[in-house]
Image (cartoon, rainbow, N blue to C red; front, side):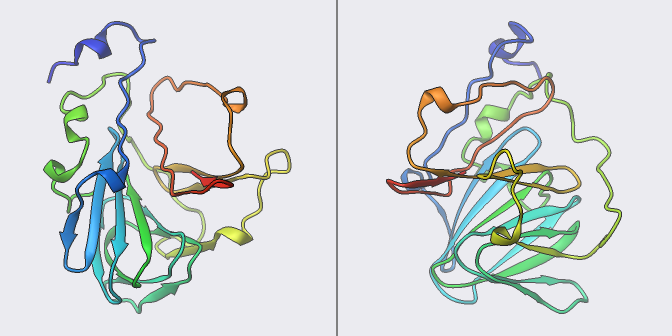
Length: 218
């Protein structure tokens, strides 16, 4: 594949963004489950909304995945292992391989992965943006390996995670191949409070989960 013109102009050029408001995009209906898919060059985001109890989503990845349960719990099932139930407000790090998640009615869920062999790329809303890979973005490479709890699901309660002393709105999580910042903004955030920066060889994405007049979660 040949890089697109905006990718070859300069190593300092800015890639055209992919942006989608899910409420304004058609979802894929799977039973009583609605699904939206977005991607970066080395990651894919699956957003799910359950309209009934007991809906099940299956996942297959060669790397660890993140399962976000911001406002409802769910049960994660691995092959040959008992199910593990996580409460609302959890971030779960699930080992590589196949598993499923049983969802709760009214819940919203997000699965973030570097690899999803079980997803049809043609169903990704911004798939066309990655028809031509950006040569500046490095491949995933060799994943990190955990020193403890290797092969076990980790369930982390957001409220129990300590934020850095100099940035109380920031919480950080890491899988074998992904680094995630969970940020809660209190009140509107003006342009003067932004922190422009760049990455030489990897891509960054943002997901706004909830917004009111007072708070935005990203």
